Length: 352
Image (cartoon, rainbow, N blue to C red; front, side, top):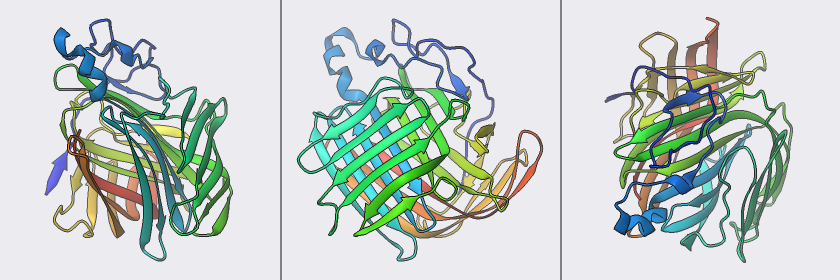
């Protein structure tokens, strides 16, 4: 079954607050850098008598991924209003297995998330695990200690290089009346440091190991659905190549989630058609842009299924890991040949 994203695009080039004093988005569109000040204190979508409940509907998260030739690691701090979640998972490509652990915290007590993606510390320190993400001038520092993660625990000390000129895909889109999504996706972050899982330590090298960041803030519809496809790797000539594709919730008429990253520069895409079988996720997926700039096949080899049921909050995700192959045309009309690029694609349904 095919799925389409929307058409026109508007690039945001000037900084402003995200919201005006009435809680309306001041700008809608996409940007190469996070130009908007995420003033969530101005959120206003309930009538006055219900305003005290608004914080329960605001969602905030920081998600870091790390791709190595043999594994994928994910680390997340999330404040979903009603509850907070601290979770991590490790995917073993050769064994076709994954392991994950989640801490669910009422009202997100103890989880700290800064207003903007450009500065500050995201942190949780509890008796079972500690996770910390710190924004620095040249990158992001990640520290993790989770002794009871699986048999041998999970720990990491990672620095993701993110120089100021490295471009991101930043989108600001409305969702229904006075609801919105402000998101920053960063691919191909050279990683150094180490990560230890299953009793084995991997030393990270920037020319082999790449990270990605999914930073999200907003107010969603209670029933939400999205598809997200992403990859961070290298072309045959060793240039870093990244993909971010997606569709689902919200009005994407001014900004789709589709972009390619090459050597730290973003090449913005418009409409992309997705074809996949939601009854057989392991069948090949297809992503094609009608303008001929992108034609990819995604061949999964592992389906990570994760489900949460907290009564008010429920979610189910099928995250497929596999390989991308096909062609991409950049803004400079260069045709890139993609062959067996490791990445993932997911379908997510949520009530939150």
